[in-house]
Image 1 (cartoon, rainbow, N blue to C red):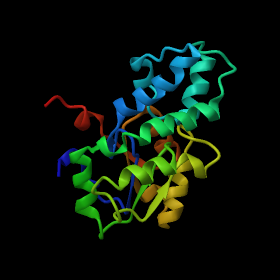
Image 2 (cartoon, helix red, strand yellow):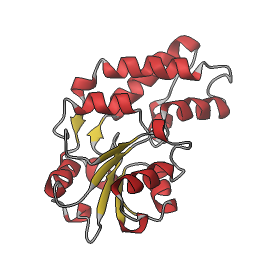
Image 3 (spheres, rainbow, N blue to C red):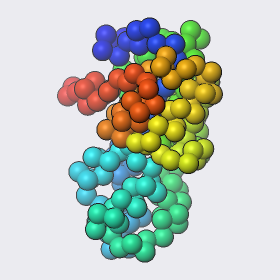
Length: 200
């Protein structure tokens, strides 16, 4: 395990999904861009990449708020269509091996949860193709909380599900919104981007 990913004295580990446990960035971008295009919206990947911590619905609303799309976009309809496109390619998603190593090294010794701004159906479906099945005590998604990241709700609910105080949890994240959410929840956090985005 890479030293910079070692959990130290943490008593529970919380993992973001997209970009942290799995390399799904381009697949997520392509699915979102393809559902927005018929509405006359061109989604720039650089803009999308800078907001990876947002849920699909929040991302569309942010796009409209910032003037990149009209305010009358059918958000729920677009999210559903995006999910269908993404799921069609779920078997092509791969793990980030450095983070996967952390999961496998601590399975059975520390309680672990996936705490994601993604949708439960997407994560559960994708997980079937990956070596993560049965390794997590809990899965908390945007579907189960009132506010998504950067609010702390997802992480706090995950800590509660693991019955571990927030201050004793460690979060693995790859987005600014997720890091803010973890810190607001009173949790330590490791930014995995220096590892997962390191050039080969």
